[in-house]
Image (tube, rainbow, N blue to C red):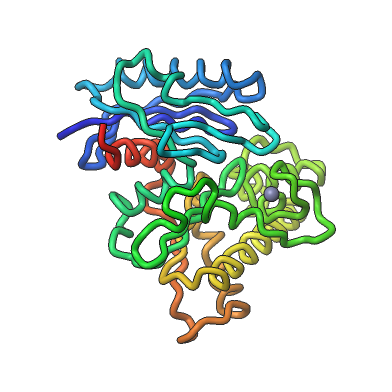
Length: 302
Ligand SMILES: [Zn+2]
């Protein structure tokens, strides 16, 4: 089995792992992201995680895949833009990881996650699919007629979380206002709970507080779920997929999230025949982002 090193340069954490072509993880490393300290510190965190993942694996990887939450020219392996984060600076991702001496491919994190869903997540045969990744931000990737939308054009299909759902809403990192991401990302859920005076570190804490009957948490969760449902309805109206796959750490609470989204879709989404678009949680779980990074390494010709 050939192995790839997958590196996910996320907004909050950097994750790396060695993944077999069979989808089995051989190693797994996660560490806080230094993104706010600038691209060099961020890449350094990525290289550290990658080196550790290589050490921990039983066999050597032969290629590298890198996923980032931004606009990527996948043909060149270049990060073009990351909204407000690294605005306007082109970064050659392949060069940043050249020290490993392996062929490098890079793509937007949602495109990478889509590649993993099709390869290992049980969605390889869907001709029309929307994937939403819900984390620090919200990413999306779209399959139309069996092929990824846009044929590699940067950001094509990646902005379903950046459709405006509140015209007078908060400014978004992308430059728009009231994007779905400002309401239904994990970080937005945490921020909403904190603004109500709740002491929470992660999205799971907000769901836990809601389950204990905390009304402030319930308000925050309601706003999150209503926003997420709106994003899903918008995605169905825009792309009319067979299936919408929801991925990201918050989907550990799919028992809470899916029924609310299903109810909203049944009530609000127009589709023929009625009820024909499935909305499901990803099967890949918390390892999904690293598997996505590895999946794009396997896609490429080294
Ligand atoms: Zn936005």
